Length: 205
Image (cartoon, rainbow, N blue to C red; front, side, top):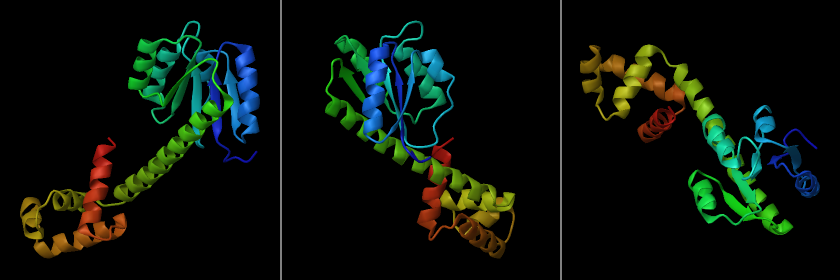
């Protein structure tokens, strides 16, 4: 399988479940990675390709919900499909509220699981792409000089060039020069584009 093959992680303490899911996932063209406990899974490095987690809610020691809490901090972009042998509605609601993408009760059909995995991987692919774009945007912003960053911040807040100059104690012509440089380095096609970029950068902190 290629390096870009999506990874489907499975955490389930039942070896027969792990083995059957490993075969099913592999037959669908994805790369399965199985673990018998939440602790084992936490020791594995994050995947850099689209991925998701099939997680048994009833695990010894660290439960599925405990692991979900851990991942919400360390790997918030990982979609989780919960599976359980018990039709526990309150637990299901809790898992979904905490961000699980699906909750399946054993025994579930192969097609039902594969559809859930396909949907989760599409979600992961989108999240990875957005993360990559944000990383690039941060790099562009870091390439601005301190003065260009100051001018950009004031311009996107709605101030006119003259007002920006007054705030920073520089001439309007100097403001225009810095503004032009900031637009070029950020690769903004318009002021609206620059405002949108600034909003994405501030929303990501």
